[in-house]
Amino acid sequence: MTERKPQGMTFETWVEQQIRRAHDDGAFDGLSLAGKPLPRRDREKSSYEWALEWARREEGDVGAMLPTGLALRKEREELPALIARQTSEDAVRALVVAHNERVDRYYRQPVEGVWIPVGMPDVEEMVEQWRRTRPVAVAEPDPAPVAPPSRRRGWWRRRAG
Image 1 (cartoon, rainbow, N blue to C red):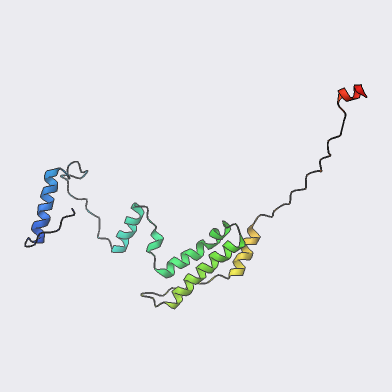
Image 2: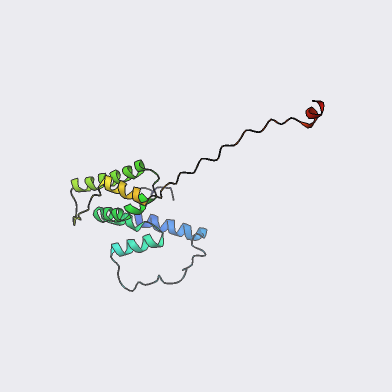
């Protein structure tokens, strides 16, 4: 449906014309609920409940729908597990600093609705925690020095000599 509504035609007439054309072309044939009433809901849902249900059904990120303060608290709770997967101190430090910058930005902006306090983790404390949880690297012993091959004379030289 890329065509525009012609001038002088009402919107309802134009929409009805589009539906009739689609029906004639068979666009509605084979639909699962064809000829059946729409399923009724047990009760009316709020827009928030509807959005949560939709996100779960579509396998979306429900956390993205949280208010900023709650999303930052959730991120703070998940921070230790995320830090444990890092491979270097620099990566841990960058992760915590980025989180703290987002929290700082949240504190500096005016908030609509309820303001939710969020704590900021100490960077050095998180790096120290990461160090404690890292497995201790055991230095492999140096392999025993290999003796140079002996210079044995071949059997043909021994006979000749």
